[in-house]
Amino acid sequence: MPDHRDDLFDEANGFLAIGDFENAIQLYRRCVEIDDDFFDGWHALGMALMKSDHIQEAIGCGLKATLLEPNDLLAWTALSQMYVRNEQIAEAEMAKQNATILSIGGKVDPSR
Image 1 (cartoon, rainbow, N blue to C red):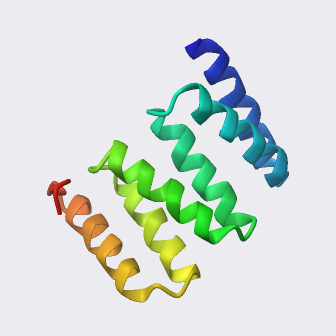
Image 2: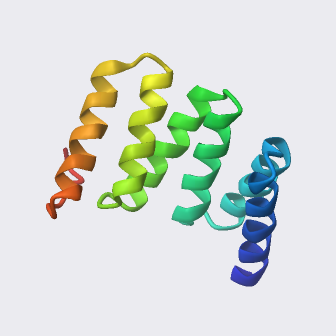
């Protein structure tokens, strides 16, 4: 099963690279349906959704990614961008703060 997930992920990345967000989103969705704990799938799905202006859903994916990998700098940075696009400035600042902590070598407390 992971090979199938990974093949779908690779295909989705190809669609994303050429700007075909809708096909990329479809395939990323299938990846996370196969494996709900697939961090890369949730992160990529969130980014593709943000690029196609599905901001609320992108935020949900970004939150899932940070739950799966609370110490991933790019996940927090992306989540901050998603919040900014949705004009949720306080939430964007919190996510940016976590990204800053990680960028200087700290760790994020997942219970916060």
